[in-house]
Image (tube, rainbow, N blue to C red; front, side):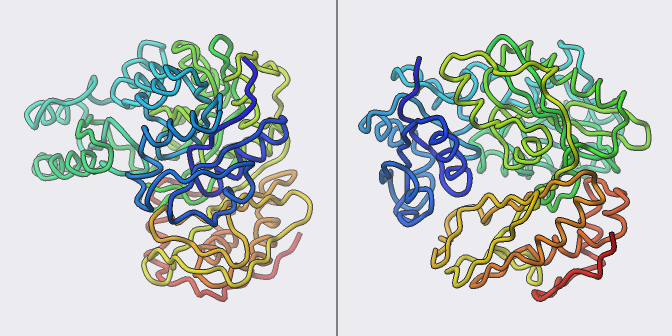
Length: 463
């Protein structure tokens, strides 16, 4: 079916990204906004902006009934959920489809199957995709957890079956730790996702986080290669790159092929990401979970392949086939994305909402800034602190790092503290330049660099 009007069931920079992609396809947009987001950039850019509830997300962006009613009342024939909020809510996807609208993403049954991480592990194993040794599905109580942990060996990771974003995760080094941490992880998962289910995995201490971007039309599936997301704080990604410099060509081919195989096994439609742990010491990779949505870090894949992932999502949701074959997807150069958050690194990354008094965005070849900001905009205190993503591309990783440092030195966001200075320090760090990082590296680095001055400037650069 032809899509003529999309309801944007999200906010912030991803809402802006969706509106721009829709406009390029000649599709009108209706933007949802809460009471706190009346003046956000997406509401200004959309053809129509619609209030959906109070500031609190549970009463607006997470209110399935209010979102669907607004879409129907304003003549929309499709809903794009972006990332976060209702993007991986199978019930919402089902409600949208039953109302006769198109959900721009996978089918509800796919979200349901792959959204439960324990189920996804089982499906990966059935598709012949390697998984981290762990429990077969959810654990049913402490006694079963102890038996699994003794079988796979300590330390083990306790992980929430639902949700993401690093919540509901603990590392247990002993049986006593397991007894103490399982109730904590379950309670956190229940509060965050409404589901306290857990599963166990062997803990890989110096793992790298590598993920594969895939696209499907329900029949055919292709990949847009992989990204590395090992620079994390409290299991939240802060810096992403594509391609992953740590992989050999043979490992890259096997990794991407495994992701396509698993996505095909569930007849995947839309954009999705399969996440893996890569053991740098042994050269092994293990599937850990699938995100059945577009991701924050999708621009680095777009920059190295030239594939517009959001536009392709809209096209396949309308019933079209993928517009390109695997052979047409080529990698060119290297891209890096850093997340610019309204947080103060000098004060423990405390969120810092407030008014943007001045904004100067970097430009030049190979520089992209996906953001929701404009001068005078007041950042509300109710949501994620992400302000935008600075993405750079260059012919190789070394040149991309130099370009990133240059672009960061030009970025000026005044009125609130941001994480830009942190990224500038990382861009000039010799270990980052050497690629000698893993998922716990940044935590250790922050211990040695507890304060990042707000006025940090790049070190002298040489080409």
